[in-house]
Amino acid sequence: MSIDLDVLNELKEIMGDDFEELITIFISDGQTQIESLKLSIQAANLEDIKRIAHTLKGSSANLGLNDLSDSCKVLEYTLKEGSLENADKLLENIITHYNAAKKTLDENI
Image (cartoon, rainbow, N blue to C red):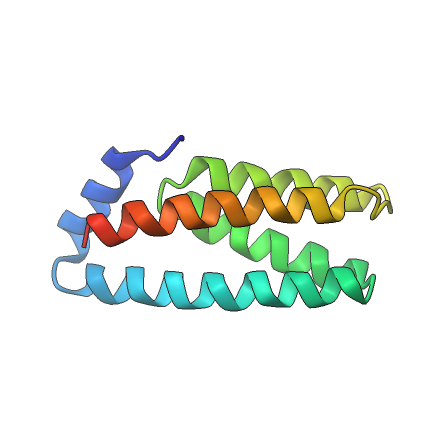
């Protein structure tokens, strides 16, 4: 699993007491975004899938959650080609990395 703990620790140092709130918001928003991704994939809504994947990619990258960010990037770029062919498999990968990231974040707050 690729999580840059240096990024997390630096962010923790910079944010101080607000770090825990940031992580809590990320975890909550991440779960909401994953649920939205599921619904958008079921509805074959390419624009919403790309938008959500892009948002989750950026927020996870900011926290050093490289595997999650990379998984979102793969989904985003696959959909730019207009194909939903592997979207379910890519979503499973995102969920796996989100759960791993959530566990690491829970341990670091």
